[in-house]
Length: 74
Image 1: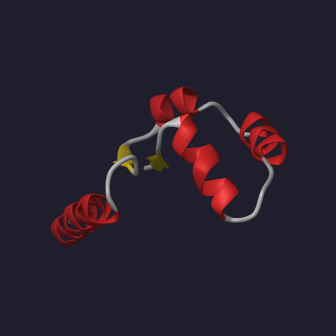
Image 2: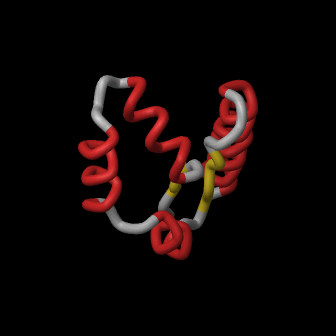
C-alpha cells in the first residue's frame, strides 16, 4: 500500500519557509510535485499533518499498530 502524509498548501509554504526557503523556491518545489489530491487518490492510508505534532503522532502510531496487526494476521 501507499501511505501519504499531507497538510494544507499554506502549511507546506510555512514549513518550507521555516527551513530557510524563499516563498518562490517553496512554490516551485510544491509545483514540481504530484498534486496532493492526486496523491490522496492513490493512497491506501493517509496521515493528516495539518494538526498538532501530537495529533500527527497519534495517527502514525495508530497506523503502525494497524499494519502490525495486519502483518501478524498473515
